[in-house]
Image (cartoon, rainbow, N blue to C red; front, side, top):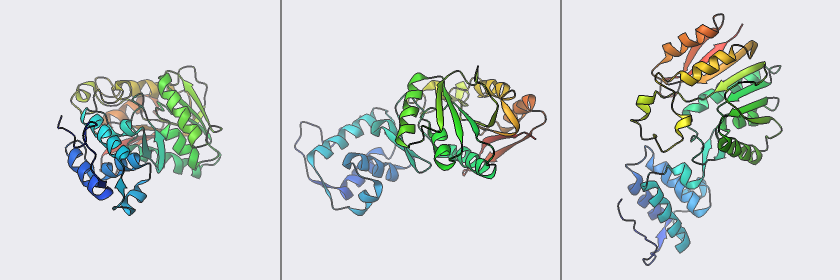
Length: 293
């Protein structure tokens, strides 16, 4: 690991936000696809401000404590800790969520599922019973609840640590009255029916996962989808066939390379449904959509 500019035993040098941003960008350039944005996020964490303030005050001089916090954060990033875990929070759907290594880091591609769910619920105000399976940080359920006041959501995760994080985030965003969190294995013994079932379950094929940088950085339980990436999704599809209400909607985030396999699997359990996929902003098949007549 390259030596940091400001180890704790060295004299602290004066540094402005402008200089610090350039320093951080240079340090993390090979570790992220968005070094400029991540530098702003990290410095906002260091200074306990938002990114807008950081950009508006380039001449602000960091104090010695802030410089040390920055150095320690960069050391953790170099050690392989993802930035969201370093700062303990991450933005998703214009909301800020607490995250720990017990939960998957919210990603922009999952906003497609949230947008689709919110639009459908708003267009169908008589539909309010929602199940969100594999809630993790709670970002999907909480984002839906924040935009759809009539939604009543059962948010489920098999990990008690994840449920604890999700409950904390629900309290922060003041939607606890709309969401019931359950520690459970998918929809097993969860009574239905639900108007909407949505899930971002593990969908990366096991062999492919082991070749990705995210492997061992984030919880494998939330990433490993088995040999074909559809093992856990297949279990939930089978359960959903008995729990999805007539005229209901199911939304599953999927691995972009297997849309036909995902649709074929869904058709086994929903032969009468309209089944399609939706492209994300990168033009990849990201969302499996099941619409019951």
